[in-house]
Each structure stands twice: as C-alpha cells, then as structure tokens.
Length: 244
Image (cartoon, rainbow, N blue to C red; front, side):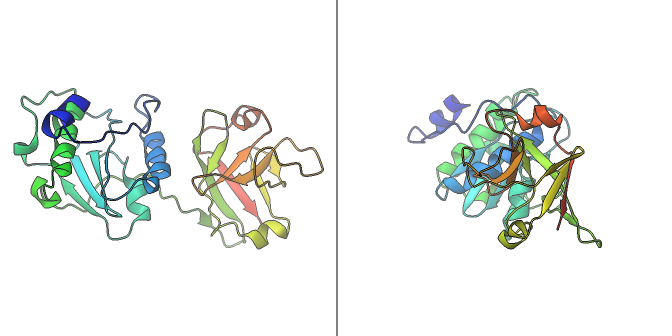
C-alpha cells in the first residue's frame, strides 16, 4: 500500500497510526480513528483497512469530514467520525480510473484505497471518485441512553491493551457537578464511586476500581496497575449504569 501511494505521489508523507487492530475488529478500528484524527492537520487523508468483507458487495468509500478525508470500506469503520462531524460527505468509490489494475478481490487496500488516497493527496477533487451516498453503514450510536428514572445507560465501547474499559460517557453526560454530588456507576454487579484525574493519583483511600477521563474524551473505568477488564470480566458492549 505504501509503495502504491509513493509510486503515485513520491512526496507523500505516510504516518502509521497502528497495525495492532485485532483481525476483523471494525469497532476497534472505528474507535482508534475517532481517538486519533483530531491530532492530524487538515487536509490529512486517513486510510483504514479493517475489511472482513473485502471482495464482497460492500462498497468502498471516501468521506470528507472536518477538512480531512477517510478512505476505506463501508462497514461502519467511519461511523463514529460521521456521528461526531456534522456536514460530512460520503462518496461511493466507483471511478475505476483511480484504481490500480487489476483489482485483487482480496486486497482492496492496495488496489483501491491506497491509489485513491494518493490521488486525493495530488489534489483530485473528492467528487471525482464517485456519487454521494447517504445510506452508509453505521455502528451503534455513541450517545448513551437517558432513562426516565434519571439513570443513564452507557456501555463499554473499547478495551485498551492495559485493560482499561472505555465507555461512551463524555463530560456532557457525566458532569463535574454530578461527580461532586456522589454519582455512582454500576458495571457487572460492581459499583464505582471513586474518580481520579490520573492513574497514579492518591485519593486518600484504597479502591480497586475508579473512573477517570481518558485522552479520547470518554470516561474510562480502571484499576491501579492492573486490568479492570479482567477484574470485572467485562467485554465490549457491556452496560454501564449511571445512578445520580
């Protein structure tokens, strides 16, 4: 893929975000993109290849959002970006003029996504690649569910390699005043009452589990020098209930 990009634009600067997404794990790829894209300047081009549907009828896409571009499969990997960025535009890649030929049925990263990204880097207008679409695939929304009884139903959206459980709660959902008033979280039958500003903060009492705001802007449930996911036997998608 890098060779294809550099063959078409030898001045391109290529940065690897990660090669550690678990195989076929679209949600992990979506979260990683969401966590990383704001650190890049416009008009960066992000190529995401977590593509278990390669060669099937799933569409290849390019998305324009926040002054940047996202190239990859229509399997939900860009849905968090689209949910966060109002005014995004989604295009179906159909103009084979910009593909590498012959197109392999098993390596669209090399033969479709990389050459399209290279063409974008050379100044080709995004509308040249194909028609705009609105019916792209979406993962479950990042927005927590606010219930009538005053509780909030959130969920674990990612577990990092340290075992920190990243939820879909933001500071708009769980405010500073709510935390100060003694809000509680329940997850897998356990209660989380302690909140820290950073992992090693001393709070004056020993707790196994605590919440803190992670670098991606979401509340994480963690434990000191250990894996909260293993301690709780949590998997992605498990519920987190906020009791005010």
